[in-house]
Length: 193
Image (cartoon, rainbow, N blue to C red; front, top):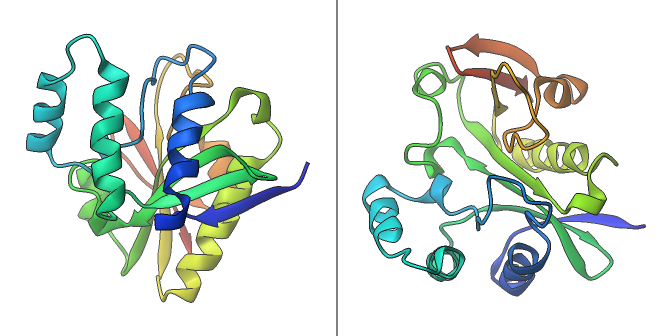
């Protein structure tokens, strides 16, 4: 297995769609179907998309994803095993996310910040360190681009499940992040670069 992390660009759109069409959420994960559109979508567009769901929720979300991808509105990283896309991490400048970032984080930035908002990894590739590879690549790229910090937003839940798309606190701690803020529902984990 040779896992490679690539930053999403126009040349990787078909790989992105292939991942969400064929490998993401194939284990019955309650976060699916998803093409990771909501985090990069304003509330009005999200409401419009939901109103169009009908009997084809996945098809409607995919349609919006294609439009957003072609306009560069979805940013992040794909993981590959050879030529097959096997994972996704939505990560970009904190300002790229209209309402997905907790308000407490927006009010307490420490300078130019890169945000990690979600992970999805094909079921057979989970638990082998791909999320850590994503974080390491993101931190390296953010530092090269002049960012001061990278943040992740772990959820606080009584019954933690493997379906937490934000990533657990332990994942961020392992990558050198520290808890900087806590709200009722989330913990803001930050790494100064």
